[in-house]
Length: 498
Image 1: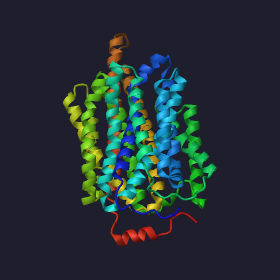
Image 2: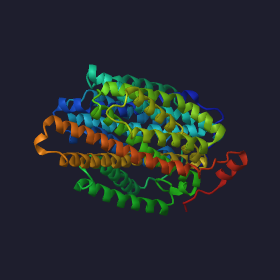
Image 3: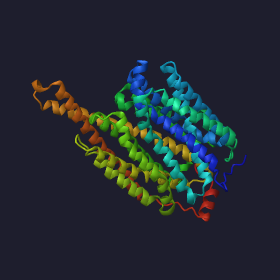
């Protein structure tokens, strides 16, 4: 078929609705399991190092397949790709729901990841050709609702189900929605994006797998095993070397697996950097806040999930509104104000103590989510607006991959900071006490206050990190989407290729 990717005259709203529905189910599924891990450990009589593979394995498969999504979107029709992805996801859900042992459960989760990892890039690419650039903000705001709200409400829903039902309900609940989406896709989905013959460079796939997979696993495992663990060190070194070789190979290939020519466009590059820093801070907040609420304050998982739910609702309301504001005012003011709010509230969260009221926690967390909702989609949409339409698959693939890696890195770093500060604080407190007065109750109190200090310090570092992204937004320029500018963008030769 033709190389030319044209803007659709009319958005395929039915298809987009189906894609939104399926992607929401996939994102929700990914966030449901964290709260259920202790229950699964008990049922299968396994330890934490084994059960963590339910989340680590899912993340690894997604991290490996997302860079390949640019090739899949170019080579195969979006109808066949979507139906295949949904079929794989549904099969994985069935296997996970009725798994007779832990091995089958891991297999089901990884199969789920194989299907769901294609849905988000596919949705983004169809949206990019469905709406003109000057109206993309509102559309991408809806996508932001799916991307952020589904993971945010997942723990609350999961906490309720695990407390009152069986963890298998988490998969059984998802299954009918996956089947309905699959049947509707077979009936109503059609292809709107052109395909073209292209070659899959198998060495690039291997390097991408080792590179992104090694980094994701290394950083994820570092938060629990420690930075000095031999497996962590090996994964990080292998991942770094493979990623460097992957980048060199992409720059030399005539038809790269992931076209790095996207980084010749300054606003896309700036958006990637800001999104990476923001993702690191966002994911760290998702780890540190439950740690404070549950481990320091002793609130149950269900109640803590309910405390964080208003923040998810705020993001859900704000995502479409932010998209419309982006179309009107551009990315710089939204990004700067949003990140300023995020910095201020993250700093205030570093001041949480043993007596902070529940209502104050909910208020500050919700305002933080309000700030974050003003940043992610406007900045990234502006960056994608600068790319020629033919580079959309590569732009979305790189963006999703960077956010995954940045989230893993941020989580690992901030959890390590928390653990180090906690150990140092506990040691200082014990050293200042008379050994004869140290009882089990005293040790528990020391552990609680030390963990609090570790969480406070990590939030403080997260606030400082977010300041970097806030400063970078001052250099963001709104991409010109006039007809003359678009004609120039589309007529340019693809940068970085021979």
